[in-house]
Image (cartoon, rainbow, N blue to C red; front, top):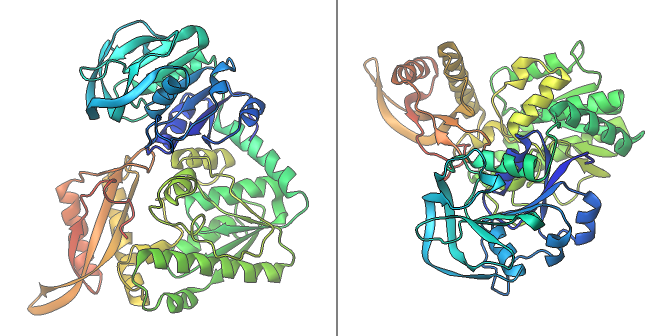
Length: 514
């Protein structure tokens, strides 16, 4: 992606790396994350305004340490090292990194000891998020200490003349007081970025790139009805119009009435110029899922069946050159691409079968976070009802049903989820939530309804607060609201006699209930 101003993030495998890109973009500056193995010539060709080295799990002095070229620091481009990145900068420039006498984890008091452009506007003492077992024991030549903690003599250092800065703590996480301002100071003041990147810039650039990449080819879009795939379809519609064939697979695992709602937006009479194809394939998916209980297997089966349906539709259309998917950045990270651990596979990034009958896969949103995707949707004119739709996984209710998937279970969770969403909206409790939904557990228990004994399922409600979907906290919903939802579900949904509320955050859980 070509941008006038760009901050390059070199990824060394840390768990918060994707948040750095998010924080930079919040400064209205475009940012890309690339592996630390990106060559020096490629870095020069990208001409970034600044470079950020991320955290990572290794020790810089060990043989298996992840490194970057030391010449990087002599390019005249401002560099900020964070945690492992700070230690790597130290190691490569002649300082010394050793095991710390005292490891630091979590909230730690940090004291600023010298003036620094990074700390302009921040408190002289603040709480920062530490996560390290090594520390900087000796500074590289030309550097000075700008912050410390009780156990860490170099919590921050810099060589202002060379535009090299380092923080042992993580400014990108919300736990660090003033951390976002520190990153903004680096990006806007040290790097001199103007901060004029907006979502309309992303749309304009992406549409132009898609036109050039696709040319006169035909494109098949995997439209699930969720926000991500809908925005991807809208982008392609703007770029290539009727060259786009948008296939909406109703796999019988959608939310209540969702299939008809999607058709109203993208089908005949809708707001976009494209070829809309709806495939009703519920029985086909149910048959494939029969007897399958393990969530990762369900994801893979649903993902492969999606691709098979697309291939079949492509053959009906004729030669199709590209498959478009609504992959977004958290999907890429959680699916274990690069060096990250696989948390779960997504049908659009991690569950593809070995053979896909298309020339290329196009993922125009893969560098964006969920809230950024919503901004793109608004810019493209997608109706607000769809833009604000609750996030929905590609495998659908198949992973919100614990155990085997059946038509009966799908109807139960659809009805329970519809009641939950209705009452949440009625109470205005949905405004600040990242995601909320009902899931069907595989637990059945004894209950009493009227004068009779029941032995039915338990529904679990989930609601989380999150800004990036990489971490989340369980939302403290009003007790009265939970009582209302519980009462309605038990009374109105046949086969349910118990409702539970999930209090688990992410980590240790995932946002989905599988």
